[in-house]
Image (tube, rainbow, N blue to C red):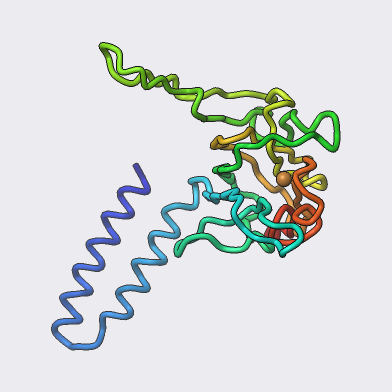
Amino acid sequence: MGGLTIAVLAVALVLSGFGAALAVGGGGRTVTTSLTSTVTNSSTGSPFVVTLVIATNSVYNSTEGSQPAYFVLGANGLQSSQNMSLPANRLIKLVIMNYDDGNASLNVPNDNVVSGTAGGTVFVASNSNINASQGSSGIVITGGQTVSSVPAVDVAHTFTVPSLNLNIPVPVSSTVVAYFTISKAGSFLWFCETACGDAPMSTPGWMTGTLVAS
Ligand SMILES: [Cu+2]
């Protein structure tokens, strides 16, 4: 409610500022800055949202062929996951959209178990959460599940940051949502812990990279 109030105030500031700009000319740029900073301040208490996409059609080279890779979904589309910047000491909402329909064996037996997230759980949605049989009530939606682990055979990739005790297993063809907080600033190595391919697993921007918290 407080955020909404501030947002409304920001709009009022813009409107009044716009009027001033009309009167004196050329003052619009300052008004835009005040709107941006006000919106940023009003969202301090909300989670920082970052969305990752796992896609499978990136050709590594002529020998390796297509390999899976993590991408950051930015304002202008997919961006490299080689270096991810996240805020420290703020709740992060991480969404992972996985287009990979193939599972991969686990490099560590417990890689299918969630760790380091709020409540030790993640939310998983996938094709198994709907039934489009077009019965009398149309599509049946079960929504998804909040889980503390997923069956090992269903895991396609993981998002793992050992130095943060963070492990998020990602089932095949699924969307995973996790909440966590990074309680210290620094650079942390992230990687996938399934055997999804030697080339992508060892190459930053594919299945590994650096997470910078500040
Ligand atoms: Cu992987």
